[in-house]
Length: 166
Image 1 (tube, rainbow, N blue to C red):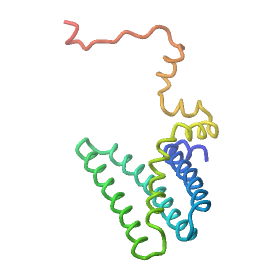
Image 2 (image 1 turned 180 degrees about the vertical axis):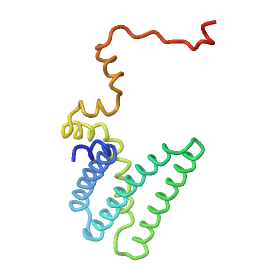
Image 3 (image 1 turned 90 degrees about the vertical axis):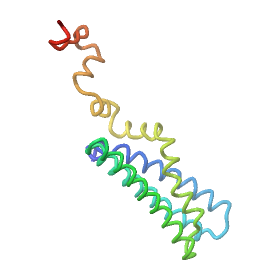
Image 4 (image 1 turned 120 degrees about the vertical axis):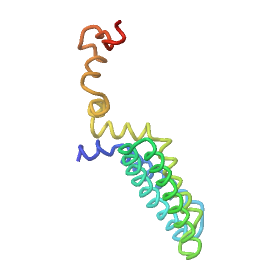
C-alpha cells in the first residue's frame, strides 16, 4: 500500500483535498440551500469529475515527460482540451437533463483547483502515513542526500572537459 501511495502521492493528495472540500461544500449545501438532493447530486458529479480529471492529469504529465519536447507540449495541450470539454459536457448534461444542479457540478469540479491550493497541508497527511524520510529518499538521489547531510567530505571539484583545460 505504501509503495502505491508513494508512486502516486501527488494524485492521492489531490484526491484527499477534493474529498475534504467536497465535505465542506456538502455541509454548506445541506445547511443553506433547498432542493438538497438535486444540489447534492450535482456536487457528487462534480467531485467524481474532479477526481477523474486529476487522474487524467497525472497520466498526461507522465506521458508528456516520456516524450520529446515538441511532443510534450502537444500532449499537454491535448490533455487540457480533453479535460475542458469533458467538464463542459458533464455540466451541459446536468443542465439539459435537469437531474442535477449544473452550478454545484461546477463547484464540485472546482474542488480540484482548491485541493491544489491546500496541497502543502495534504502533503503533511502523506508524510504522516508514509514517513517524511520516505519522500525525501524518493525525491533526492542517495549521493545528493549524502552531500546534503554532510556525510561526504568537501564538495568534489568539477572536472573540466579536456578541451577546456588547454
